[in-house]
Image 1 (cartoon, rainbow, N blue to C red):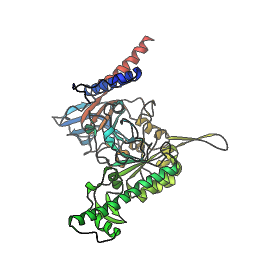
Image 2 (cartoon, one colour):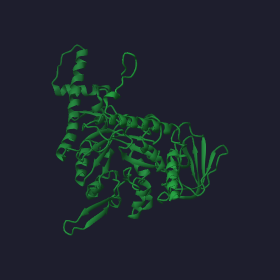
Image 3 (cartoon, rainbow, N blue to C red):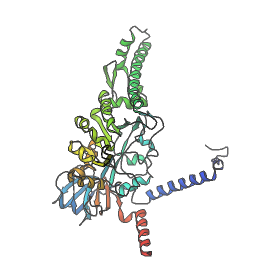
Image 4 (tube, rainbow, N blue to C red):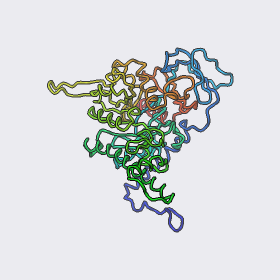
Length: 477
């Protein structure tokens, strides 16, 4: 908004001094973050070289046996070959990685971090799209690269009923379009009550949303038939039920508004009126269903089954959900585990604290599992490789623990043919570690995304300043 002189009006004068100072600080932080992204190794400023050879490196492909000393060849952003005896083209850019370890980038399957807010205040918002709220300047995306995470499924948080669409992004880029890895394919649904709700209200609102979709389609079909008769200058000649039956095939994608479009996609994208099939208008949509408690699992599975999206459902679980292992095993749906992994409860008779490592329980049940990082203020749990190492410690096979942070989340989100393992034909998105990824002393030295060298530890200005400050403090002592 401008004034008559074409200048921005001075709104700061209406703010208290403290609010004005906070506003100035936020603006300065945003400007510095964007500057850092534009002038650091975190920017995809140029296309990758046609050919890159990563040589003399230990390779953990996740699929297949590790390679003690091999070469991975990248051509035009894709993995062209990987093995012990891969010929290096004369025109390839060569990285001699002797003593290093090559590993697929890790994958976060469900997080709201990277958005400007976790949830809207309205409980049912299927029309929302995380694309509109992704903030590329957030430090979260920088940290992803430092920790070896190369794909993030950013979606609305769990304090919702139906929260809208998520987006799988690369943790790099100046605008959301540069970050996108795939079209929106999953919506967030929470069965655990939103803050201020109880379970009766939460489940009734979920059922009501789909019942309202049925009512919308019924009325739309009837209206479309009436409009057709009006164009032909004819009067209505049938009862409403028959009008709906004749009108359902006249419905087009443009007739479906944003709010109902994603609910229809959850049901497979096909119009159904009075139980009869109509045209298929949209691609099907999957659901990430949040179940914070064991008692939420059965209602979640039933809701998905009743509305036809059970086969496209991923369950995001709370720590106690291992208690519903029978229902989970029967449904055989992929699950995203919480960051804490260990469930603690007090024995009501002895008063002793019992601990259960839920990842082992669900792995033993044969479920496809994905691990999640802890909050940003946690020292170790925020690192996905540490979470995988915890699983190994509690008896999950090493190969399966590695898949739980790479290939499994890629598979459950429909990207297993592109990400999650080091195989010919897949995206050249990978991480160079100083040592074994499950060794907590190992660090990320380089990150390649689509064949582009997107991160180098020695050129990470923010990290180097932090490390030098720590060393200076140590020297002072």
